[in-house]
Figure 1: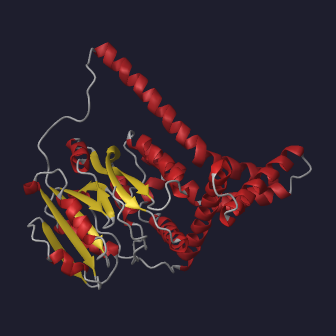
Figure 2: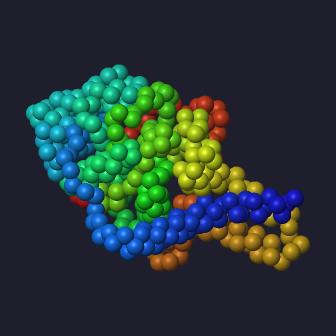
Length: 398
């Protein structure tokens, strides 16, 4: 029985972190071969990019709570985006800000900017209010501290020429003003690569709040208690049968935080919201959903189970020490956790050892946050309203 538990846990972990990404690469390669063969047989010329057409109207919606430190930069960045002024608006939904955010938005004289203030009730309530009242056919969602590159909007909206596309995710690049190399960068690059290949199959499993767009007509009101709106909104669109794609060329930049306690709290909050989301997108749990269900289970559900799977693999391994193979696997597990401890203690200051211990520490703490988030979900103790993540003041530009 211990051997069954060990292998079930180990294979599930291997699948979600390694086999699933490899399956995406294999599927993409096979799809490219089939597509090329069809073009050769039909004599069809290869198409480059998405076909040109009239640009749709776009509303950039930003939920803001006490963003006085960055809201002016956000407005400046938004109004400088390369998109026709008569087809673009910026809606700032203030969630009961008390630090002067509303006044700074009101000082902006550009007619494209509109403030939608209300008492604090949480980001989901802001979106439920602002998205339906937006004027654009396409709603672009972003965070106040996220700076978007000028050509990103055009690259995103072209995908909506395909009537089967319901949402488009942009590429978020994280940067740290004090460290060029940091733990989250490697994991974020890995996640972005998976999103890119999921997007080519029209099934990106969740967006990031920094940059994504939806058809306004497909938005459905969310329960006010929804914690991770940027996960649930595109998943509902995917569940309804539309494609959710990824545009690697649409880039936005966001600064990471140096406050690791707050970062851990943010991840635990997201984890609680992830478990909460299961009841909001039940259709994606069923095999009848096809590839989107496979992606949801492989990329998300098994990841959320990783803390339990890691514990199960370790405990089961303790009952199998009569075999040399299982003594080696136990040593490998304990060695990995030792690396994580060394990463926490900061023994290594540079080089390969520093990177290895930092990645191990990041992976372990990430899964600890998932466990904490699951406990909050069970206790229903995670509130929906969010707090700003403190960042290091800097003049570093992106």
